[in-house]
Amino acid sequence: MPDLNLPVLDLSLLDQGPDAAARFRDELRAATHDVGFFYLTGTGVSAELETNLLRVAKDFFALPDAEKLAIENVTSPHFRGYTRVGGERTQGRVDWREQIDIGPERDAIRDPDGPGYNRLIGPNLWPAAQPELKEVVTEWHDHLTGVARKLLRAWALALGAEEQYFDRHFGDPQTLIKIVRYPGKDDPTPQQGVGAHKDSGVLTLLWVEPGKGGLQVERDGEWVDAPPVSGAFVVNIGELLEYATQGYLRATNHRVISPRFPDERISVPFFFNPALDARLPIIELPVELAAEARGVEEDPTNPIHATYGENALKSRLRAHPDVAERWHPDLVAARAAS
Image (cartoon, rainbow, N blue to C red):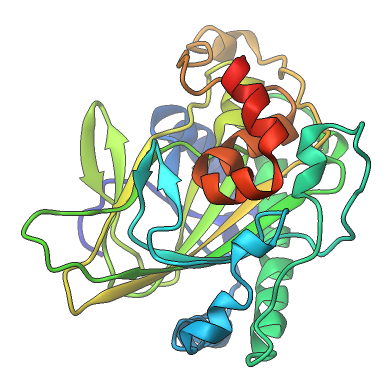
């Protein structure tokens, strides 16, 4: 394995006896305190499932534009479905990618007096011409949910809490899968595939097409490459875990640089987050860890909310202004006035 800028952790250590499990928890705590990013092997995801995921992703993006635009996200008040190239923004700048967003399959909540984040709840939009996409994504979702729960239980113990700490406070998880294609650019300078940002939730498991670089992570004020590693996910924590540990764990800025034409890049981030109405309480860290908590990073342009739904809504409204303006003008106006 070439020299890497991120630590590599093996999840299977948790099943190899108490000493191996303790070593994994120590490595997990150190990686997410020091960097906020790491590679994760030993997840049990089969090569066949990875192959199927890449195939259905490429098949989806190869559909005629009319088929993809039939499920465009501007038709969904819940921010689901297809986003065309240039249809998403990070920090106000256009991201050069296309994608489909898939969340929990639920009925919409029609309560005008409910919290704004309830509008994120609703059905997905699936391409009629590709029924296999739903089957493969469902299998992917179910497997990674198990991986995420296993990680969170290890984190809880590593932080001095009881093992079921996150299970107790998560409620019904609000997951999100993005299947993303970064088309190649022929500009002479690197282009923003997706701009620098932190994830708004708790935990992200990122699968990247083998051999395709572009992901960069901020370390000590510098951007470093995080190329894909065979059989591994890139894992990072989000703003809620930074909040819950009062900065002992730190969410980290990351970005993607577009590939050069004619190359392209497929990636599939899986976001595992609490129920929209869940508030992660601040973890009472052991004294030696609490002494190293750096506090929640202050950014007036990006406040971190204790309730996950508020964080998620903030992110969605900002990333998809066309959907926000069409379906949620009241929320846009309220934020402009605040």
